[in-house]
Amino acid sequence: MLYESKTLELSCEGSVATLVLHGAGLAELRHSLDLVRRNPFLEILLIRGAHPNAFDGDCFRLTDHDEDGLQFLREFEAIPVVTLALLTGPCRGGGLELALACDYRIATATPDSWYELGTSTRWGGIGRFYSLTGQYPGTALTAREANNCGLIDHVFSLRREKIELRTWLDRLVRSPRKRKLSWWRSRIRRRIDLRELERIPNTSPANRSFVPKLSQPIRTICSGLELRDCPQAVPLAITYLLHGGTVCVDEPSDIRSALAEIAKRGTITPLELEKIQKRILPPGSVSMPWVFTGTANNPLSIVTVSIRPFSQPVRLGFSPLPENHHVEVCDGHARRQLTRLLDATGYEAVVVPDQAELSVRPLLARFWDEAVRLVAEGYPIDLIDEVSDSVSHFPPLRTMDRIGMDHVTQLVPRLRVFTELGLDAVFYHPDHPEEPNTLAQAMLGFGPRMNVDEDLYEEPNLDELQNQIRQRLTQVINEQDRVILQAAGFKRLQTSPVNVSSLTRTAA
Image (cartoon, rainbow, N blue to C red):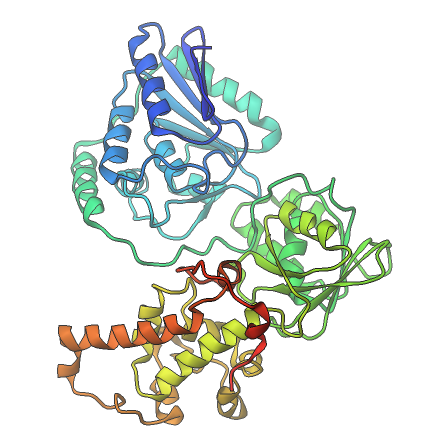
């Protein structure tokens, strides 16, 4: 063992050094880099995680200062030994930045393998991403998608990990050559790096589908799930199926189509898909200890969960958007067991009092209703969604269009006029999702800002409009409980206490 700390371990065997990461610390990484640089007998440096989430952006952070992280990764990229990264789980943010600075990257293809730079890191990753793939980073990629675009050099199944790693190390030991960039790609990378330091990201995280990462083995938590008219629990059932579980469901078409899309992206192979399909059973064929029952086909409706041997069911509130993995859980006898199941499947349980609409839905109703009021007063639709990015991860008007007005009207009654007209997408044109639909503005009301001159969009007036919208939207979530705000998808969380019962007041 050359060096050991709480965040990493550095060992050496022959000409190969192995750096095992538990998390990340810039000081420890710099010290390990110096030890490798000073050893004249080392030719290969293998970097791997101590656990599948070691390269995940949630637990991997190089530094809060962009210039320090950028300088360290440049030094790391220039060390005289050949660097190889072995990725076995999600790789995002700073973890992907470090992997991109390596000469070679190999990865296992599992349901938890996702690759995403995000918008919070600026340590040269965009330039390295472009030099490898010839394109700028966008949404999250699966392991096989990353391999197809050139981000990952080789992808293999989990059972072949030791064989493939040994093969790559033997190949590099025989011919330890660092990867070189062409002249024009080097110039492009330097130019992108300079722009990257000046770039201030303000976009919401990219959608990485609805398969959360696992935090612990599923099979030790429960032996099977049953869904009874419960489309809200479909993402949970898919995650459970992908990791070896059995699911009974009365309507399997949603699950089968979602699994087909996951297989199309390369997360699972056709053979694995065929095996998973056999674990989707009709209701009543097997007695399941966990039964999820939906009250309606509305993504905003409440779900009841019956757990043997408990007689009292527990009420759940799933988020209507698959990107949000927070789930409201009512306090009850089986809450602890249910929270363990949600934690194991990558969801985050938020315990709330047992109330009619739980806590998030009344808060969303007030937030969405305020956004509709702004539209009725004549504020531009696209400007409302743009400004809401500083408050919420999910822009209100686009979110309502995405969920569908038939479902949203139970929280925002003033939109019922559009459902009576048969309109499902109101605020944005259905054929052009990026183009605001002025029909909503025309029917909701003619406010003082409805028909404005182009002079209004000069810088001072535009700032004034943005401040007015921001103040109105922020006022809705002021003095709310931090956990409830996080479960609803809000960014700027408040720390002042709140009486959760006050959240049951729905929008007028």
